[in-house]
Every structure is written in structure tokens, then in C-alpha cells.
Length: 356
Image (cartoon, rainbow, N blue to C red; front, side, top):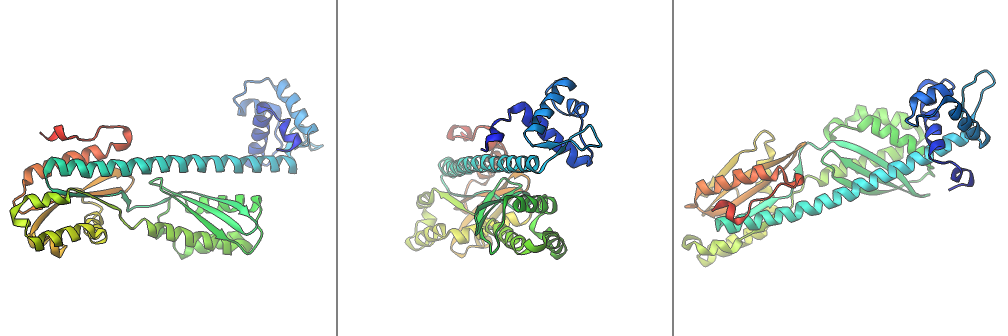
């Protein structure tokens, strides 16, 4: 922190912030009476005038000779920009910590759900991690790492965070980064990848001017981040329950079924089929030859989609013999669907006794 900056207490910082924000909004010099209405300090105009006089002596604001109001100096703008960047960096850090905690919690919950379902039904179970099929940009934060690298942090509406290091051929300072952050967030916030068309990209690049290459790299990073979210993580449990049913215990069938259960890509493909219909969050039943997985055609597979809101969905499935207890399975899935919606509101998950 610079020496003069250290001399600014909280009250002076709030007054300086109010002067700069007012001036940015109106372009007019800002007086003490305006500041007294603008801030929550509950100070008299006289006290504010004294503080403004101190800020002027320190070089943060200027008083045009034609007006009693004050305007920011270059030093004032620099203080404002630096503190704004620090504030945004802090917001991104807090968001990343929240998302990491939320993601870890979700993985633990889904693994527990798969195990509980397997125990309750005596069938094999599978569940996908939540996937966002309506991803939209919530926030973009660019930060300088060094002379040749910029960190892009992309937060999506499901609070998924992606970090990417971008190499730059040109030197960029914090003021350029701040302008690009404002440009990108103004243009892209609330848009899905499908809505970022050539027209939108052209407008952003035009406004970015000489920094259009960096903007293009950020847009490429966005596209890659959305693409990564298309994959599904699948958690399974209870595969050995299949051995309990004579019609499935044939060595060849068991081997094929267990191999199918280990092929997470094939399972994810089947589960994604259920997610593909964004209007369908009900129960889907595949009986025998209806199964999209060849080696599961001696079984029945029952799936349901859970919905966490904002387009964030996942699928849970139960695999058993064709003579499975369909009523119990569907009741279990319906109950689970409702309870998964409240996972992050500290609602309880079903336990083994709940289905008895």
C-alpha cells in the first residue's frame, strides 16, 4: 500500500468512492451536500467538507476554479481502480471457495445416494453428477499474472467455475484489464454459448480495439469451458447385487453386465439420453431389448431425472432383473427426486429405514 493510501481511513475512502461514482455518473463536480445524501455515514455537510479538504490536500480530488464541487484526480482514479480490482478478485476467490465446497458436497451426496439405493432395492444403481444444459455466463474476471499471462476466471449460472491461463503477446496493465472486464461482462452476462454469435463477437472485438486478440482468446476459453460441461460423471454402486438373481447369474451374463457397469462412457451416454429432453423430468423404464446398452438387455433399467433448478440436472438409474419390483423402484426414485432438489438446503437424504 502506498504511503498516502495508508492515510485514508474508512470514512475518507467512502467519501472518495462516493465522489468518483457520482462524477462518473453525472460528469458534474460533486459537492458536500450531494455526498451527505449519497453515503450512509450520517455526517454533516461541514464534516464532509473537512474530509474533502483533506482528500484534496492528499491529491485524490481537485476543485475546478469554476465550481465549489470536487472532481477525481488521476491519483483518485488510480486508487478507485486498484481497490475495485481488489474487490473483484476477492469476490472471485470467495465464489471459487464456495463452489469447491459445493462440488465436494455434491460428489459425497451422490455417492451416498447410489449406495443407499443399492442397499434399499437390492439392485445395481447409478447416478450422474449434475450437468447444466442451460449454461449461461454469470461473471467473467480477467487478472494480470505477469507480463505475458492473464488468468481468466469464468463463472456460470450454475456456479460452475473454470480457470484458464491465457498467454498474451502484448503487455496489458490493470487499467486495460478493468476495461476488458467491463466490456466482456456487459456484452456476455446472461448469454448461453448458443447466443454468443458472430454479431456479438464482432461488436466485442470492435470495442476492444487493439486488444481484440486477447478478447478472442477469452471467447475461445469460454467455448472450451462450455464444452467440458457436456460430459457426465457417473457414480455406481451395488453391481454385485446382480449375482443374487439366478436369471442373471450365468457366468457369461454376469461378466458382460459387470463390464457394462465399468464402462462409464456407455452409462453416461444412456443417462444423457434422459437429460436430452429438457422438458422431461419423469420416470423412464427400459425393459429388456429396449435398453440402449446391448449387454443389459436381459435386465430392466429405470431412470429418473432430478432437477436442481437453473437448468442443472442429473439422472439416477436402477438396474435389475426384468422381474424387479417396479412399484418399489419407481416410488424410491420419485422420493429421491424430491429430496435431491433440497440437497443444498440441508434437507435430509433418504436412509435405509425410510423405504421400509
